[in-house]
Image: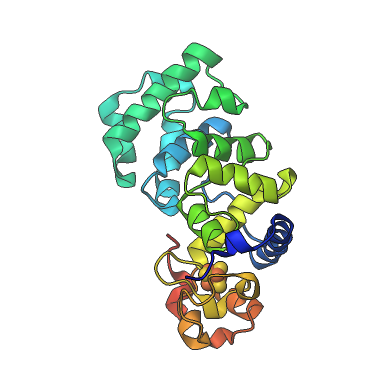
Amino acid sequence: MTPSPVRTETDLGRKRRARRMARLLAETHPDAHCELDHDTPLQLAVATILSAQCTDKRVNEVTPKLFARYPTAADYAGADRGELEELIRPTGFFRNKADSLIRLGQGLVERHDGEVPGRLVELVKLPGIGRKTANVILGNAFDVPGITVDTHFQRLVRRWAWTDESDPVKIEHAIGALIERRDWTMLSHRVIFHGRRVCHARKPACGACTLAPLCPSYGTGPTEAAAAAKLLKGPRARELAVQAGVDPELVPAQAVVAEVP
Ligand code: SF4
């Protein structure tokens, strides 16, 4: 059996490779950002709760009306459940999510004067806020560096042999030791962008991927340019092909307008 690259690479070698890949990711996805529309920490907390098992695009379709109807934590705390459920129904699991939003509102009113706190220890004690959501809020609403270990992040850092951990908290610590703290939030966005647009769960676009020379999982998806180019997704799909040295004409029109997962 071939030994795992995580086991054979030295810690220093892995750190150097991870940082080179992080720089390539920054060049590959200059548009990376939090894809959940929000203006305030409360709006981001609400949007993140709604994003469970739902695309960010769908959440963004629902939130303008929701944010207008419930501008404060007290509004969620005192919400009419039926009305709230109807507003968030398109995001799926709307009963559970309505429950989380009402309890979040109550928790914020009771413990934090209706304000979203800017510290991890306080955030994770709030109803509906797990560690992943807390890091999203810290990184994007408070400028406190945070690593967001979602399903894309987990898959990619394991494919890259940055870590062989499978527990999200252990992954967070392992990656935190490889990448400088100030880069954590943007790294999270870039990794998630790459997972949504290039390194898909089932068929990653290996033959059209800028990270290929440093990726131990190259070959998990098609390596031939024409097949790989068809797998790129999003408005910058053609630019992604060019960056990987692939003819952008190989990217079909529907890939450019495709909804990213
Ligand atoms: S080479 Fe393939 S497995 Fe590696 S990051 Fe790129 S798409 Fe993902």
